[in-house]
Image 1 (cartoon, helix red, strand yellow):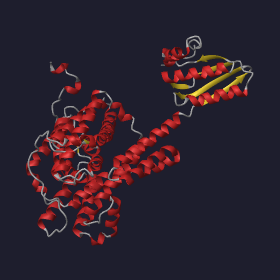
Image 2: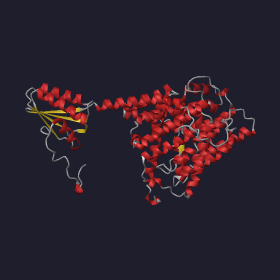
Image 3: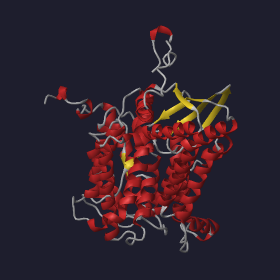
Image 4: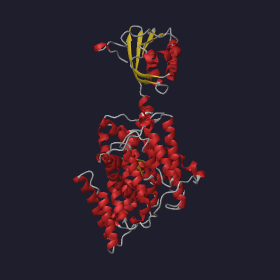
Length: 527
């Protein structure tokens, strides 16, 4: 097939001048971040590097957004820790294999989403749930890095307890580690204030390596980072797939919501088209590459994608170049052996700080108290269930569904009585769960007005009537008839007319409303 006949997404553009600089800029940030995020997941540093190499090369030809940068991210790392906790010892070969299997399972979920064209789920994640979850997850991730940043050895306990203990006993920690952590924060944040492209993370890493190598630094360091390329393998603990299935679905959905948000924001800013299904496919391919090459689940990174865009990326080649640079770095990865852990801890804290948006939850309290409750419950449940944070997300999602159903069941029915005619006008969405509310209002009106001889069901106030709801209408008609009244149905929405007539019969349903489609200026009609 000629290249011109390929779909637009399948055509690989030629690399442009801005792609090289953008790819280098992101790789400089990705290499230390990959090691830091792998530690959040309880994995050895080389696993993070593997997750930042081949997955980017595989995803690049498939991504919808030219700016989307894939790889290890903080939220996915925390979810990976929760999924694998209790199944194997952190950092052990069994643990590493389980992480790779989890990536393959996440890939399967993403590919199914793409093939079934379920990209719409990107829009269905409840905002209060996501805000509450990400705020709590960001707080947990930052707290997990506090002991390393201060150079303390906290006693066993929860993440928040260890962080609190470390802060209270900061004077007993390693002064050099704490100083390097503080300097890292200054360099990263200060570099951003100077210019978005200033590589503050790289400068901090180089300073940390210099201090560790040329002084009597006594703080903790990364340790041995095996040099060498990843080996592709299907030898994974497949018998454990069932234990990881639910976590894979959650990681796929949470990660996909982030990927889609990134692509959607940039596409809107640049007035470009994007495809949620393509992003699902690209990230599915990336996770498959991560699992088969000894990595762990990956997703799109907002900070690295933003850097990619600001650094001048023009095509999808920028992501491929980033992956190629990380791959080229792997044979010399041992140069990071002496990198202080406190530097990596500070890099993580700075990266996840924007996630802790508790202020958004407070603002919800005043305007949307019910939604705020969902967000705060998700926030609290996520903190309480750590490290199994996916359980907190499930609690929040379940509460959001309950709140939604409760709201949908609140069907208001206006009753008007004129002589012997009762006009009932339900407002809202009519479905089998909300029909009882309309039934109660109509029966109450019939009881209050025994002289009524006719009931008119005015359906103009309904936003939705599915077939199941139209069958439920039949019960209302039967009950009105049993009370000795005749029934007529008016103003049926055009989209629901066939379903209503099928359920009630055409004799009960009045003809089309002549005002249902009033003319609009310029000859347009309402649709």
